Image (tube, rainbow, N blue to C red):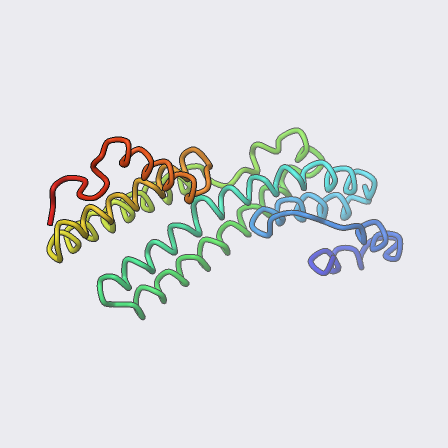
Length: 212
C-alpha cells in the first residue's frame, strides 16, 4: 500500500484507488516489486479493475519464485561466504562482504522486478515467467554453496584425522546421517538409529574400521 501511494494519490478517485489495494498482498519482498510495477502502470492508465486482477493473479506465483530464489540460492550463498571467512580467520571482513553482497543482490532484484512488471502491465499475468529472478544468478549461488560445503567437509575431515582417525570416522558418520536425512527428508534421529542398527548387525559397532 505505502509503495503505491504516490501513484494512487494522483488517480482520478484517490479514495477508491486506495480502497482497492487495502486487501492483503502476500508475496516475497524480492519479487513483490514486479506486481507493484504492473499495478502502478495500470492505475496510472485508470484501469483499477485490471490492477486488482493482476495483483491477485501474479502474487502467489511471485511468492513461490521469490522464496526459491532467496532461501535456496542467495541467502545460503551469503551465509556460506560469511562462514568461510569465519573459518579462515577473517570474520569481520567476511560478514561485511556477505552483508554487502546480500543488500546489493536485493536492490538489483527490486529494480529489475519493478521495471519488468511496469513494462508488462496487464500482460504480467500471461507473461509471469518473464518476472522470474535470474536463473544464472541462482545457479552460480548454488554452485558457490556446493563448493564452500565441499571445502568445509574436506577441511573438517583433515583436522579430525590429524586429531585422531576415530574423530575423522565420527565426523564422516555424522555427515552421512545429515546428508541421508536431508536427501530423503527423514528425521536425523531415525537415520542415525538405522545406521547404528546396521552397524550392530555387522558386529562392527564397537570398532567400525579397526581404528584407535
